[in-house]
Amino acid sequence: MNELTAPIHHKIFTLRGKQIMLDEDLALLYQVETRRLNEQVKRNHERFPDDFMFQLTQEEYENLMSQFATSSLKQYGGRRKLPYAFTENGVYMLSAVLKSKVAVEVSIEIMRTFTKLREFSLHYNALAKRLIEMEQKNNKEFRKIYALLDELMAGTREVDAKVIGFLRGGA
Image (cartoon, rainbow, N blue to C red; front, side):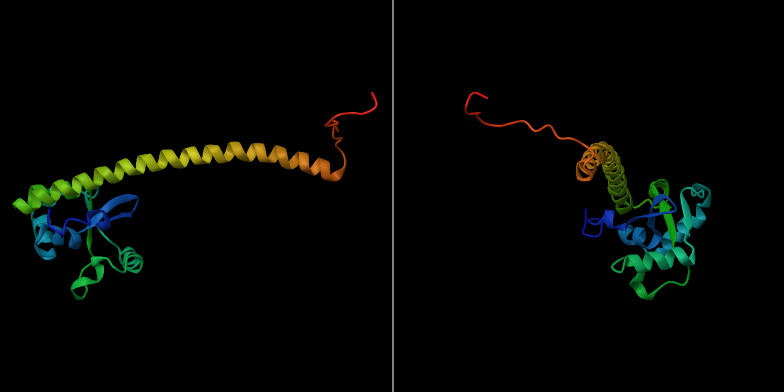
């Protein structure tokens, strides 16, 4: 793969609860102009239902620009139209519309990246669940300890004082 495709995972954002890639990032990876990519999509609009592709709102676009200062969002002197976001399925469909060798290679790498992110997410979620379970278990134990300490501090609990060591004088 060329240097343009190396940081693919940096070009995947979560928006509206979906992992997406922006048209301008995809165009850069596919080595085509953004307007050419969007022209191909418009010519094949039946291949891109709403769950494959949608246009960002002004607020979403501004949020992405503010969060990702190093993103390609600010390149090329700005945009006249709001960008389009492509879900994983939309990116896959782009490879059927853009038939160049580069498009095929890039689509394969993008699909692999989406798969890796999904696998990472599953492992992360399992780890997070395990940590929550451990915290809940430990919290129960600490509550018992705190209750005992409170009783001791209040003097309401008697402590069994056992003698440690040797007794002299036959006691």
